[in-house]
Image (cartoon, rainbow, N blue to C red):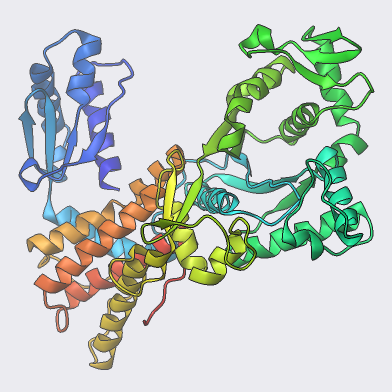
Length: 521
């Protein structure tokens, strides 16, 4: 909210200064109070492009800001070396902005920058050959939170799980189940997990459906639901695999060697060409994947986002090359690679499940620590980084556990408001109180943190960074606890309004993360 206001003022100042070129600059919260509330590197970025002294350019921009009415919003503008411009926001602006939080309520933090752009987000897409593991769980939560963020930013998002329900892995699964039922050894490259003995069904299709239903149940426990499960078999039934190969052939992007059809991916930077159709006439997984993306584009989405596991890292380049070779806009395909998870109990890594003696399943983790803790810890680390997940920490009912800290913060706020209500003070549900008295440092710090929420949501959505929301939530909880320690709120309507605005914001943080917001603990 405040950063957007400053951005508008800066754009107006640039126009007044006759600077028409596009500049890549940032407006960030100042790291220390003496540097104001926000700072921008606009003059530094502009000086490079304009071949000017950054301090002189900063002075000119500051002058244009003052002439353009910025003093209605900003109490002071400072210029510091090597050319940063610091902004001190007027108390009246922050005070007047707080009632807007209460007015917007559940919509607080939502924006319209997405302009209704249609996005298809595909994630998890685990093979229907066994239980989901914790890596799948991390990608599931990351995908679900990204979908929530994009919707909050004004995009129209649909979510999809791609099911590889035909092919070699399905044949191996069927052979493995038959072997287990006949008490024979597991076939070479087959599936030997204990779950194989529990699988129900009398056909390949039944078994796939059973395992998929188990995966869906695990995801539902985690609060992850999909708009659609798309079966690979649909692509073959509709002739889309043949269509994808035909497109490449028409565009002269294939060769025939040893009776097989190959995509000439080496021409597009891959380390070798890739088989599309084998000599026996059977198409490869790669060909089906191209058909799937052809199908996605045909549905009219303006952007496709895939979240894949780290084992698919080498697959990205060839897929994008093939999408481009089919004549499709590869720049509208975005692929996020999710890193793996290592489970710990304290300092000890967990190698195997105590129950099965095999890899720990996602369902076991959810059963042990609950959906809220699972979702928080999967969201809390950058998707590009490996996650070390301590189950003992996630179970703690103490302030050491960040998800407990956030939920406790929300419950504490609700308790304060209930107490005020019971004493006949009420809370400012309509935000009508006079807030001009909110000038204490702790009050101001809390207001600034609250007003940073919309920008935090937008940036997290654009960057596809759910961990920014967990970080914001932790910072807000810390700032609120500090405010509550410093300021007596009961009997003070203005402060109770600030408490209510904090409740709304923290609840919305938890909702975007898909975590419950308890009113008592």
